[in-house]
Length: 175
Image (cartoon, rainbow, N blue to C red):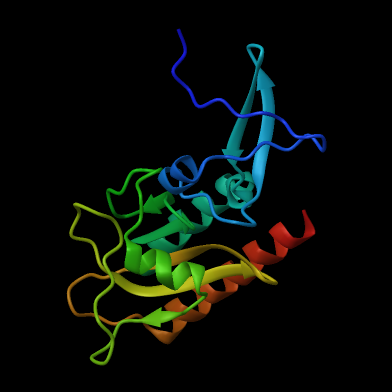
């Protein structure tokens, strides 16, 4: 016996996803969903455009880390996609404060006037810089330079990070 929630399809083919489910899956109004069919069922998943560029992103993260010896991570609006130089596994949920910076497209550079921004729950990693990734009005995620001690990010590191973010956002916009 199945214990799921029962909903009816309306005359336009729509089904309402219950609020409790949307909240637990962190689905918001306007979020893109991927719809697929498998095993006589319909599956809805959050569509994350950046996953299509995961290989390019991993190459950039590795190159950035090798060049600057600064740990770096890439996240979508809710979780880590990839990291280099720091043991944060993919699909790890990001903190509410990092999620706020990403979803509001607020760039963050660590300094005396800024409160520290933790990256993920239950791990002691803090952001040294957060560069939001967006295309037009779509907030997609962020590139995070992970703090090592009290060292601030250099202008060269920030310039390189911003270049990658622009390149990634432009690729996603063209796709």
